[in-house]
Image 1: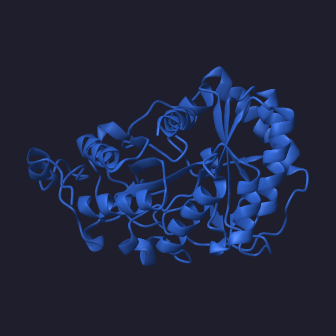
Image 2: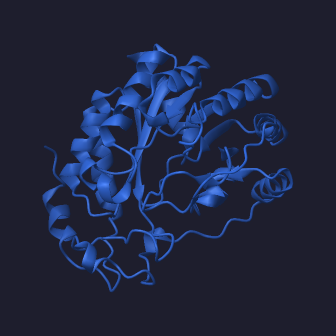
Length: 325
């Protein structure tokens, strides 16, 4: 089992500030207060570039949703300026209630039948090079939303054939047929985030199961027959340990995952799960090294890394690694 380097392990147990960034692991009862000052490495300048402003305008005009906005992603400005964006289909109300997620939960009431065309039109209009399509969980639908993913893929391929398509899907309750319909369309990248280590699932991912998610990733890899790159992501800061993270990496790799992302959990509101501690950038470096040693073809690990962070670069790196294998 991999462990952090000795000099790093010593520092992990040293309190760094009032907010305890990178310091001792805390029990949930001793978690970092919501309004505590965040460490310097979690601060980013506010977005405001020309591409960001244009994308904000058209998304509002079309009534589209993006996970970039819904999840308060800290990288929204950087990614949108790079020509990548993450569209969220099937509405903005999720049928599950994960303890870390900022998307509203409840009973969805409406699906826009024109949504696939609207998304594809904006992908074309903005000249996006890499579009990520995600959705809320829709356990209320017979196919769990698979047909909408199919519609978006087909629409983008017709209207913006040069744009790479990455999907970030729910687990489809582990059902093979909805997943098979999606993979049949051959997205360039299929992503399903496991989010955290298995031990924390009962607390962080109510309604989900780690091994079910891992199986979805394995099935996607097999159904794609080498034409679809598979990807998953995790957060740190919920109380996991370094060795648990590395063990989870190993399970994902055994299930055929090629791209891995790891980032710091940031508590959206006081009603969400607390941050147990902030991991130091050097700890992310150790995690990235451990993941690459396991055999992932692309790894992005850092405090501000999110699932779609530099998604275009990760996809290219994984494609090169796959071709060389």
